[in-house]
Length: 230
Image (cartoon, rainbow, N blue to C red; front, side, top):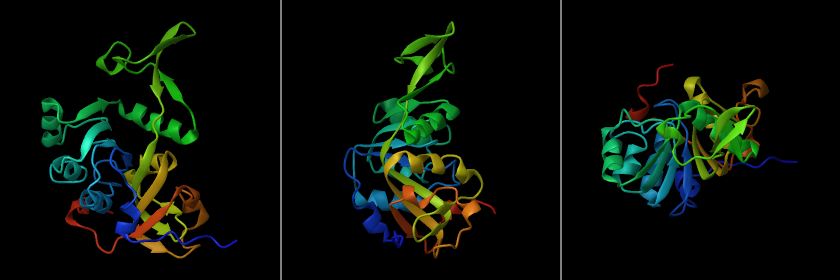
């Protein structure tokens, strides 16, 4: 059987994102954040989006472009501390923000990719993070029910991809990108290099191509990627 070539243009990859979609965006700060795909989504113009991302990047960088263009209705994240613009939008009520402990966000995404409905955790019991959440008792201890997270689309940054969509990440880009690639209905990848089939050794594949729908090769890296040192 011949494996399909999943490479395409940036415009073709982004085209199917619709108003109201839930979009997971990979990255741990700058590393692993798909800056070019985010810019393409701004140009595409889909609105009322729910974004799921570990952080809100910084003003003028990453998902802040989507926040500035008014395309985001809701943000599920762990912190906004580096982005004063995002904090202002939250405080004014322009966007809804749902905070998670960082490990809980990762686990909710992992659960979504594994087909689970929720996970149980004692993290946040008795704090604002527990507000409105179901609490169950197990072995005499209370646990929060943390619903699994899935998305319509995931935007992923990879160091290398092959034509079929097998992916390899570098450094902390491995924190959220692999989880999100398993938890979305459609997965769009920007890769710094696209190699022929077999160009990534099997033991170096972090995300198998069966989870990937579209691969876009980056011709250049903008200044937003510049803080990543390798």
